[in-house]
Length: 222
Ligand SMILES: *Cc1c(COP(=O)(O)O)cnc(C)c1O
Image (tube, helix red, strand yellow):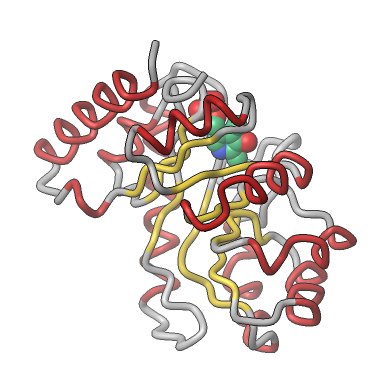
């Protein structure tokens, strides 16, 4: 399917989920995850009106960034190795995967400006997933105060690959609660307003549970 038709479907689903939950659909940012697709398909994505692009690997990120840089806001959604920070940090508008102090330290050393970050939380506690545990989150947030270039704009999670809707909902709801708790601390360096959650198979549920940023690859550009 062409990206424009896919986008229309996704927007319809978002609108429905928002109406059912008394949310404003303008609160939701759709990030097109272009990691599987070519420059041509990414061009089509931008033509369809998408302005947020997400990539999860250094090479893919730099390829798309170099080609389209001033036409999009650039989200890095994958695990970021500390030794790669210096090659790309100044091109990242939003990092979705802050998950350890050593990474914060490296970003603080290398970035020229403050970086908007989501803290990745491993809500489902799958061994294969990155992120701080819910128990570690509050100490982690406190420790980030030492790094002036880090601004915590929200929390991010990846839900398990399951069809169990109740379980998915629980994961998203837990992340929303954690977001509220960090936000209530009123920290200048951690406004923590946003929730990056929801992918192709679960973004509707994520929006129902408060997602502000959804990261969609397969169903949008794939
Ligand atoms: C690949 C990826 C996505 C998009 O996944 P789809 O299922 O293709 O929509 C979202 N978030 C992260 C972190 C990813 O790596």
